[in-house]
Amino acid sequence: MKLCVHCFTHSSLTSEPLPPNGLNLDASNLDARDQTITLAWNGPSSGETSGYNIEILDGETRESYYQGGSNTQTDVNFILMKNGYNYTVKIWSRSQTFNGQNVVTSDAFETTFKTVVQSKLILSFQSENAFSY
Image (cartoon, rainbow, N blue to C red; front, side, top):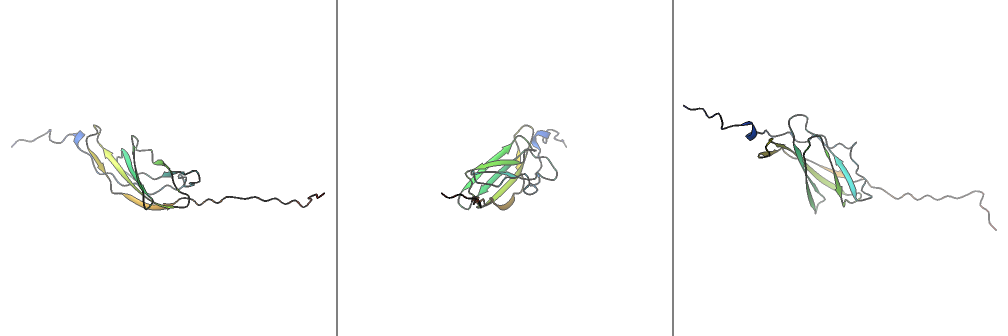
C-alpha cells in the first residue's frame, strides 16, 4: 500500500469562510443626496478571509463588486444611488489559497437597508424691526 503524500498540499486546501457578521451602520454613510453611499459591514467572527463579493439590488438593477486584497477592508462606495430607496445587499466572504488557484465563498449575508431620506431645509427670517418707507 502506497501513501500519496503529494496528493494534498497546502496550496490546494482552503476552507469555507464564515459569512460577514452584519452591517456596520455606524461606519456607513447612507445619505444619497449626492447619489453616493458608503456601505460598511462587520467581517466574519473568525476564520480566514481574502476578500468579499458584494451585490446590491434595487428591485430592478443588480450591481456586483469584488473587494479583494485585504480581509480588513469591509466597506465599499456605491454610486448612482437614489435618496430614500430600499436596497437589498448580499455579501459573501471569500477564502483563497496563497497561490490563488482555489477560491471558496461563504453563504451570503443578506439584508435590506434604506438610504437616508434628506429633505431640504428652508430658512425664513422675519425681522421685528423691519423698516418700511
